[in-house]
Length: 295
Image (cartoon, rainbow, N blue to C red; front, top):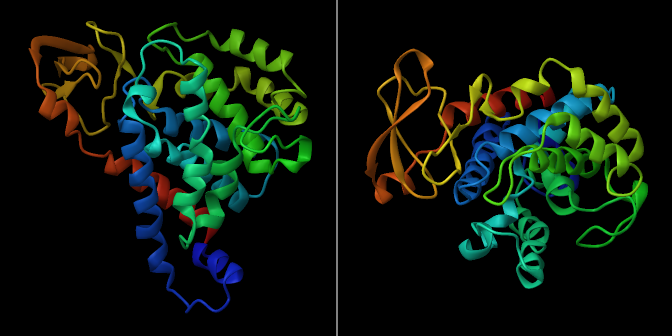
């Protein structure tokens, strides 16, 4: 089934579109999601990691290839609504207070409104709107319970939380994988779907897991800024001698020879740090892989 078929089923009066329309439409959504993530200096690679984790869990659940692809797409787009969150809240270096947390909790509905009317909305709207719902009814925005939460949202919710726990923030270091799995175990049936959470815990020894946690792309580990701590994302196409910038303090680094990490130059450049181009190669791979699975 082509992605455009999903839209035509939902709106039969819409004129037929060609399959070639799907790739640029999906690319545009992924580029927008990437731009949203680029605003937050502390979560580099989060969307890629949640998408890869969601794929692993959906495959472990025995879902069909096309359904796995749709869940992967929703996972990459799940934080789309954070485009409406003020920088002062999104980039805060300490824990959020109650008022700030209330602002953050609006992002699922903002994202859902952004998708409204988009030809491919049906692929991602469950994950975007409902990934913070929890089986015990204490999630948001609607307090849904159990299986009233769509499968895609339950899968993305687990993977989103796991990545948050294993990622470093200014106010805490990322947890070891084993500790994050213990927390998921203790919240089965409450914060996390019991059956899916159990499956996810079973992935602890999966060889791919260690290549997702702490990475921003296949085989590309995150780097840390020596000045302020946030992550520095290295694109796959970058080579020794290329220049990268910390997204928080704008410190400049060059890539050392022989993959020996980053070397601080002692300079800063706010303009260049804010003008980082989207990782079009990563986005192109994701679009191509998932379109092929659904077509």
